[in-house]
Amino acid sequence: MSRLIVISNRVSAPKAKSAAGAQGGLAVALSAALRENRGIWFGWSGNETEQYEGKLDMQRHDGVTTVTIDLERQDIDEYYNGYANRTLWPLFHYRIDLAEYERTFGSGYERVNELFAEAAAPLIEPDDLVWIHDYHMIPLGKMLRDRGIKNRIGFFLHIPWPPTRLFVSLPYHERLVRTMLDYDVIGFQTQEWLESFVHYIEKELGGTVDADGTVHCEGKTVLARAFPIGVDFDEFTAATKSPEAKAAHDQLKASSLDKKVLIGVDRLDYSKGVEERFHGYERFLTRNPDQREDVVLLQIAPPSRGEVHTYREIRERLETLSGHINGAFAEVDWVPIRYVNQGYPRAALAGLYRASAIALITPLRDGMNLVAKEYVAAQDPDDPGVLILSRFAGAALQLKDALLINPYSNDEIAEAIAQALAMPLAERKRRWQSMYENVRDEDVIWWRHDFVDALKG
Ligand SMILES: O=P(O)(O)OC[C@H]1O[C@H](O[C@H]2O[C@H](CO)[C@@H](O)[C@H](O)[C@H]2O)[C@H](O)[C@@H](O)[C@@H]1O
Ligand SMILES: O=c1ccn([C@@H]2O[C@H](COP(=O)(O)OP(=O)(O)O)[C@@H](O)[C@H]2O)c(=O)[nH]1
Image (cartoon, rainbow, N blue to C red; front, top):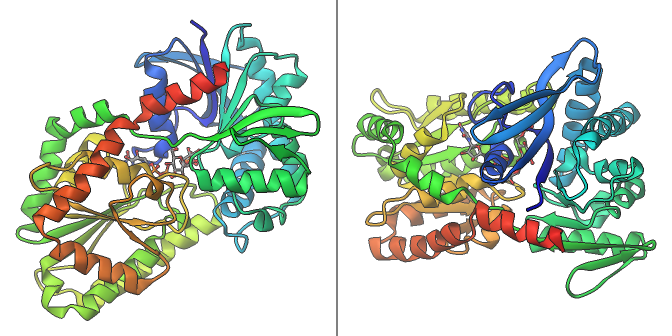
């Protein structure tokens, strides 16, 4: 059996610097995918070093071998905070108003990718399959090829791919995409992002794409397909039965008494639409004074990427807005929003999801959104909650029985909350059942097999 070499910015190493929840879905999904596979997970430790001297830190934890490197301050600033999170992240989430095109970010990004290639290449043996993840590492495959790596190499993008008319605002966009032609397989979360990529290849690079997704461009051939990521269903289902889940469930139930809890769980990121969500909830409270005290919104928002100013700004705006809404509507014994800036272990989240009558998941744009799938997986089959989901999350293409809303519309959010609160049990069960089957069948193991099979060719 071939070994799997996974390379991503973030690894779920025991020593990686990250609070519970701050790592997001990628780390969660990959540790699940690697646990049963002989192989290596290579990436950044999350730590800073005074001077990088090529030192690798190797550890075995929870059945996964991880190899990490530390990065220098300038590399972290230009590659991670800079090009990855100030240039590509906003652009790929359709926010060209927030994207910053600094030349030093681009050169830092290429420099760190070269550094990853230099450190990872010696770990790769002839039969290994190499699987590179996400927007931090788009050119890494080509840099490995430049070092003589002939193995099958796949790339999976966890975030959206933007429409061509937005993407071309990126300086040197052709140079970035050309590096992708050295992969054997390129995976996207949904058909929609795949279509945008194909459109770019055809219109900007003059390539052609066959019906099965084989791209022919500038003398190279690569398979491009959608592979929607799932949750670790078995692990998550087991977590819902854990003492930690029960404690969190009981605590939330006891503290909310007869009120219906609406829950939101998101890294503190402007792409998650939490500000718009609060406005939609405020509209619901304004329009439905008789139902106000029947509900409470629990928003869990662990801070993320705090060295990037747009993230500090969204944090400040949410503090102000939640304070404003609570000030305007609260009573002596009730506040409308419980806004919590800390992360929770997923077992605790499982209990919180189950205790919540509604999940309010309203990203303005999201590659997938695993929280939506976890909420479905955690429900009580006899009394399932209602999922209100942005139509702009990748998950909306699979979870079609959610109440799908436009997150930019306060009215749609307010109306969906009212509809969810009034929804008869039979309809809740019917909608949940079909979503549950999807979350169970198209889980992270299914995703991994699907991608790795395609990579094996
Ligand atoms: O590593 P961070 O900078 O702290 O960010 C956390 C992760 O955020 C992003 O997650 C994406 O991947 C999820 C799983 O496929 C997907 O459900 C979600 O929609 C995406 O936003 C990012 O892509 C990861 O690289 C980060 O590790
Ligand atoms: O306090 C928290 C908040 C989030 N998460 C996990 O972080 C992941 C978030 O993934 P998602 O795809 O929803 O978004 P991302 O943060 O990757 O953009 C999910 O598995 C959550 O269960 C967590 O463990 N604790």
